[in-house]
Length: 427
Image (cartoon, rainbow, N blue to C red):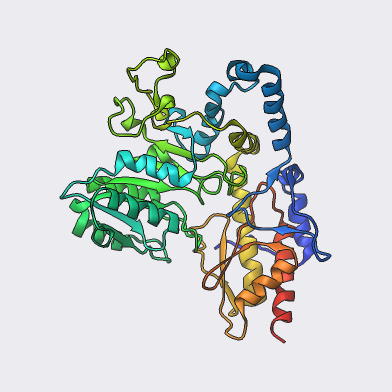
């Protein structure tokens, strides 16, 4: 790991901020209020991103258009509602390494997984299994199990679990599973980043393995989009899905996104659930009874998008484009390495990150090794000191400095308050 010749004092953190050409974006976000005499240190973008100040402006524009045009806002609004989902298309494509016609803004994450599995999990008596990551986010597991049951199979027999290694991400164990059971696997569904450890999985290699065995493959990018580099068109998973309320700052429950590789475009719509918005736009308002399939990712969209829920997502995507993801990622690597450096310098042998240093995004998952310390009590103390991260059972504190709005001094201040919390809980 490259520690960038870091130093351990506040003045140094402030000097890094003064050299940061993305620092001004911090002022474009709203931070939670002061608490117990502490300013907020917000390191929870891996769970819910902060609100961009421009969201209110964008929402007011939609409200004004609604009041001004009524139903005619579908065509006359500044961002016409009829094609509103297309406002997110270029931003999604840019952040996922996709072609624009391969991405779509619709639904929420688990709904999208179900919609996509309708197409890409088509089991038969020979090939009926789903392979997931062993500690997958519960929602993904529940979705996979329910799809298996809906098709008349037993999850105890049809659900395979792969446990990624946490070292250099050799995937010989996954190769062994696929070699042994590949002709029985209908779908491989794995995350881009493991939510608990923050480990980035080898997505390109997984896609290649899946294809070599004739398995469909889907990616859950909830923790990956807006966080790490993605090249979906090149890697060619069959599909991917993501939420937008984490690093994309779309707000709680905001509209999610999906990717369907262009190799699957152009079908008649016989292997997906359909609705009015799946119908080709040119014929949609002829109100006919004959379905005309949309020619791209729109085919998987059954309903019109909720405009007010999608507006914050569009706001944030504009900021990502303006800032440049390459610059954001470079800063992110430096922020996370800085936090890791300070943790090691201050708590070596007592607290460590379990997130692989060469395969991570913003997030560090910290485990308290010192048995004399109560991890949950320390996390609660941090919360009282207005440090906002999150706790995951049984013993992980997740902290994620987001490069759009977090500063190097945020990272420094978190470690200082962690020292206070440990002192208070180790008397």
